[in-house]
Image 1 (cartoon, rainbow, N blue to C red):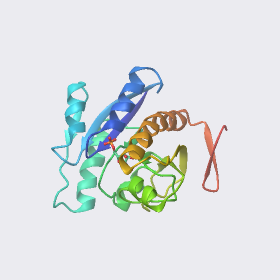
Image 2 (cartoon, rainbow, N blue to C red; image 1 turned 180 degrees about the vertical axis):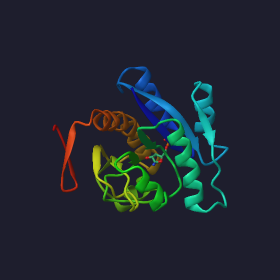
Image 3 (cartoon, rainbow, N blue to C red; image 1 turned 45 degrees about the vertical axis):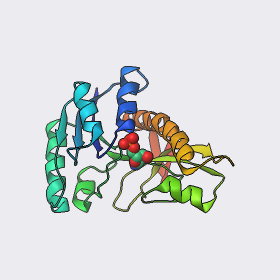
Image 4 (tube, rainbow, N blue to C red; image 1 turned 90 degrees about the vertical axis):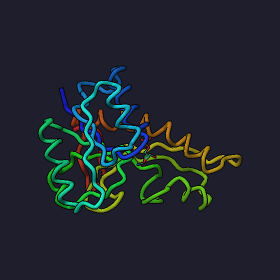
Length: 201
Ligand code: GRF
């Protein structure tokens, strides 16, 4: 059984989708060992408590980045976390933190990386006029929205879309993509060719 650690800052729909996927057996041999928010008012942390999961707030406001990350890492290690899933965690990680967990941190981003990194990716893609967007689950390295890609899912941009409707359809795919990526990583059934992750050993 592998232990997942979830880091979030907001509504937590990706966290809830991961929790539901575990309950439904779509993510195998895993449990959520701890959910950590850097914001006390994150709806996701309340949702975690309601589900009876270990949920902790480690406030980041005004704190030195690495000092905060050291507290987060201590909580993750205390709960013997094997894989860290960023789920709307709106805080940059320090190089120190990333080095502690090589290939053990996943992030989900609502665009087809490397297009539209950073904030409001769905709006960026919509405004640019792309005809296809989507989402990316990737390993976290020291550059923003940059690490090796584990899973991507595409979403067509329809003529009648607006930023909101596109973001809603991307979010549905995020939820499926995260479960798939977690299975790939936990099963360890992949290898790297350069920065390409290829399934199978
Ligand atoms: C998602 O769009 C995710 O891709 C991005 O932040 C948002 C978090 O949403 N990283 P939620 O809190 O999981 O609902």
